[in-house]
Image (cartoon, rainbow, N blue to C red):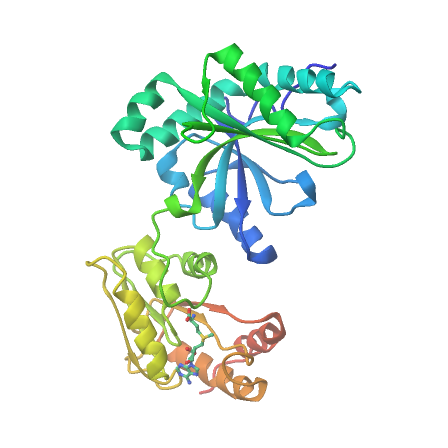
Length: 368
Ligand SMILES: C[S@@+](CC[C@H](N)C(=O)[O-])C[C@H]1O[C@@H](n2cnc3c(N)ncnc32)[C@H](O)[C@@H]1O
């Protein structure tokens, strides 16, 4: 068997570790956002989509082990420290089940990825685990379990249970950790398929992220965050969502870019009640409110707004294609009126189908 080296071993910076991020539902746009967030929030490098299992919802990246920054991420479902990532064909697994299990377990136990992965695990468990976890974390895990998963044909002689048992026994012997299937401190996840042997340690789950998941949903929170982020909001600025619906863009922005003032408008009273319901979930101390107004007649003076952020009606769930064709030019004219001359900007979300029309409206000279 060839020596197993993790793909990309020796990160872009010696102090960086390799991580895996998985994304929940949301399609390609959320996938793009995740990559963008990784770069901007945790300063990730060598961000790489995964072919493991043919799933596009996994991203490998390198970053410093900083739990507080990882907790700011909005998109990921889970984040793992990578212990080992090696092409399955490079393992040269023997034919027999017992021999293959032993070879796989030896590859996992001898991986050079344990030191950085355990350092990450200590940092993350210590950051969120409270006093009891803190003591265990300082010493390293007292207990662990291995979750093995096998798919594909290249390792068909192995079973998922066999992998869990073989790797569990080998790690217990090599490291002196106790196997505890229920009360484990550390989990080791071993995936093998026709592409890859991947060994990871889970660090973060979505519920650990410090974000309000608003009770009255509107735009997906990661998308709302991306819209707000694109507006480059600075302290002291006035940010307006003139068709705010349940207010997700403004609520998300208020949590992330404090020090700015946020104002929402909507024509529909029912939407404003949803906004109010969500607003109650936000902690006090945010300058944010909403009231009823028509986007084409905003109750705001000329040149008073620093940034407009808006999820426009697409003409499907909200409005029709005909109403949208009338609304967009009138709304853009109003945006031009209220935005501060020179520095004012608008980040507008619409469908692919409407984006050309919107670009045309912006390209046209404003009416005198
Ligand atoms: C796509 S939804 C916005 C959803 C919102 N981003 C959220 O997270 O709930 C568009 C919103 O525009 C509002 N709207 C439609 N026409 C409007 C108008 N002329 N003036 C103000 N709001 C309007 C609708 O009531 C709806 O809440």
